View: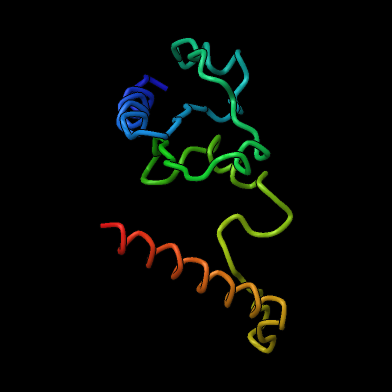
Length: 130
């Protein structure tokens, strides 16, 4: 709300863009509060950084997420953005336990296997490059 996270994001963008062949972009998530409420909070005007949509995520090779916290939790605006990222989980493999009698389905297990394999492959490449 006060620009602290945006200032850090600008420096992260500069650092990322300093690497040859890298294009770094800044985005912000949509505001969920009304102009009336923002006015009562004496919130400063929003920056002119473009608003990201869930579809924009597919265009990027990597992400650095930054957001202000409230009582140690991400902002409601950022949570709303994550919640809009798909009918599958934006957090990776998951399952529903219910009363404890339900075990993960074959699809959920396949997703977990794929996630483990994918993350291990990326980690191996990053370690080799270090």
